Length: 190
Image (cartoon, rainbow, N blue to C red):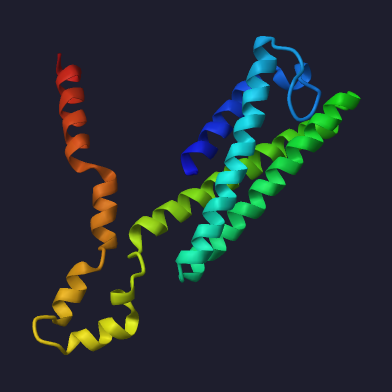
């Protein structure tokens, strides 16, 4: 879902750059098949598919994940994608009437809401991958009860917790950066 919304955003940039909005003033899709109209039609189709995927993600998150942060982000992403589609429709209607100033404001709003939608989906993806998936064996009472059982210690439970510092160090990719610095210094020397 996150990847599909990213592609919708990228295709939206192509539509804007090619003037596809002015060439495709019918809803939901364009009637002719010039290149800019085809791009606008594909963008609208992918936006519809992305909306369905965000809805499915929100429903699945609310059904399977107890974490309030994930649920809130899923609801936010769905609300934002609905706002995104609404702004896109208003944008086409304004272009059809030939209005330019409100259209520019709507284009900015369309892009901003799209970026917020994608950001919410990135946050959901990151949290869903970082948080353990809830299973019947992994309830909080079960983990607290197992601490006193033989073979399971506090140290074992702490070892399974992700380290924020380790994640930040991994994010900076020190191995790759050191190789880049070495090749750059070599090139500078030459």
